[in-house]
Amino acid sequence: MAIKKGFQLAEKTFLDYAQSKSGGILDKSGSCAIVVLIVGNTNIIILTKIYKFLYFLDDMCYVANVGDSRAVLSQEKGNKIIPLSKDHKPEQEEEKVRIIEAGGQIYQ
Image (cartoon, rainbow, N blue to C red):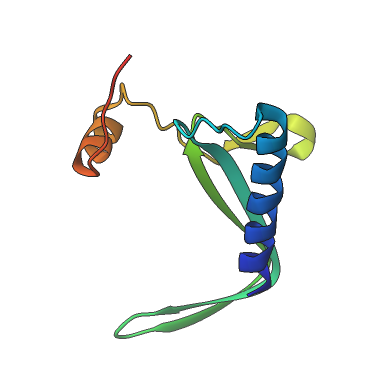
């Protein structure tokens, strides 16, 4: 519940700031965001018909991205780079289909 209220507060704060800078007129024609949530001491249970596994992990990283956003994880002092996001470009066939099936339009 605290996370949901945190996002609501962040959204309200951002919109209030944007309206104050734009004279109250907001352009709602695009989205761009990366959200990374790192949870420590996570227990993961994987259930199958035959086996039950319980893993204890130090940290779990969840990533969500919207629009033209990118995130990478750097490990081993920058010697190992792991992409955390995937571009959502309308030129990509999968993204084009998703946009159109959701009722959206693609235009230049």
